[in-house]
Image: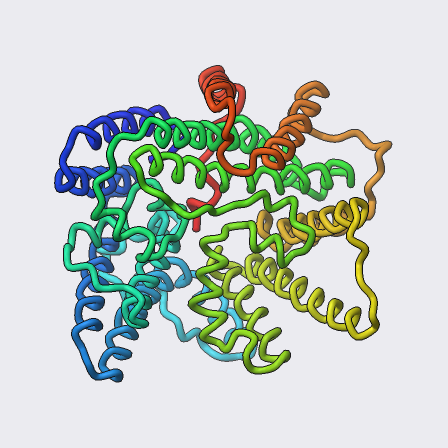
Length: 486
């Protein structure tokens, strides 16, 4: 079920009203049933996969806590992780591995070793696992709820979390509908105790949650979906576009993907807050970052901290010398790229960010030895923000486009001329309105980074009215959230 739909609006109202009329037991049962329905709207059969991983991880957590032998604990953890990663890899990476490995083997004269799916999967099962083109279908939100489930067993193994004995509560931890399909990726320490809590109706919580949801709808429907029309028009055949059109599309896409993804997070966090639950912040004005490292402290925070805690630190972090530190950083970004998609374009995107990080660290090290430092003034801060935005925007090229089109786009950038005319489906007034929306977003988030503390009613009316008008008047085409594909 899409957040930006009338179906969700009705669902949210009905579930929330029923939630506040029930006892604690009735509430978690309602939320679990509602979450199952929410997920099954997309493709009902995939809930069986989700249920299978929930059963495995639920019992793995209990057995890990019961077992005294450290080797057995580790074995149980490995079984749980392999189950989760195995399902993720099959559905998300089988086609990628088959094509990449078999093609590489054919180039050097060897026969393919990875079989086609029809040779390993019975036809009766294969029919609901693949699309019309024969590619494996990705269960929606698989990457997100897989990582959330893995954090549970890892934290139980580390002794930071008691195993959840109530199967329904644990299932709700994995399936909680606001953040089921696109995060934030929560930790058990933050969520499980909340599902055991009884939250009384709090008008201020409800109001702030609704305001955040309204801002999320505004970012998605009014800004992201509008900008997407310019981006899609320019990128459908970049070879035919001039440099100014390409650069405009690049900037628009940076704001499109931010408003699309952070808009989802705002709706998720706001919907949870209305019922009394607190989800972690996922974005903190990332385009105000003065370095790529700071950008990743502000962008998709739940994922970047997940990789920090469960990959970077276990690899050694920065504890084993500078070379290993840079290596670990680069590995994390490559894995992050693969997490986002089974394609070399995402590997390159992750590799670029890894290169940015390592290069900046080496630069800072050299400057420190040379006794050089950046001045801390408004000009320096602005330049830092501008350079960071340019680097991130260049990396987004590979995130958005296949390799062939990405290279074409990169070649077009040096041909930028402000004497050219921007090719766009919008007229001049509509294009300037897009620019106004992006500037409005930056100003709003600079002064009201999270929930506004004053004039919340005014903000709510503004955001929700513009969202409804845009939606119902058909000003833009309502699109699925970009991160649903991950």
